[in-house]
Length: 258
Image (cartoon, rainbow, N blue to C red; front, side):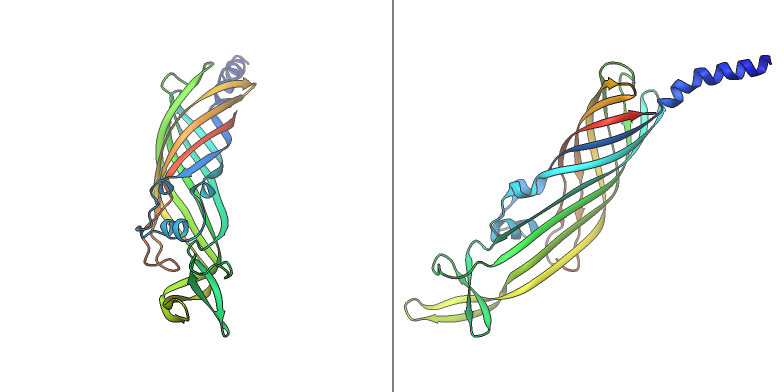
């Protein structure tokens, strides 16, 4: 009986610490790929092509990121975390400098604004990133209190995908159109396109943030996280530089401690 009472007492003491040794987190935030800050008409990335040729803006590819994570404390100041984030953005536009005219049964790209009455050459571009992240998370003043700062980092597989569909101008398919007023004008073939490619890249991340209690077993979390991830497309987008999906996320989340 005495041993049973001692065992019950030990369990009663241990239950609170066990109950708070894991965290389930749901978060949402804003993601901005770093590559958007370095778009150049002279660049050779898929980002450069889409955001200089098509009337898409950098802001079109900044937006919401969502995630779920699980965290297990190794000690009061150190935990191991696993998480998955979801970021995807899709927008459509038209070629900035060309319009479409039909010659016979085929469509050709004529330079704009030299020719203004042609049709828009439409194209859609979608990017997606699904990082699976494994992290070490440090709590410099511990996990208890009214303000709980943390920082850490880690790595894991990043699933990166790009898709293009609609119409594309083939700038290697050049023709000379003899305009009665302007003389010889270079025009290009227009073709339908439906291309996509997914690559798994080994990426990394660093982060810092804090938690504040808001209820029983609940804390509110704010975090800044930087991702390092580049995909080497070799099929549908062969010939471009590595597709850079590195960038900064700012997020808030709800933590459930159990």
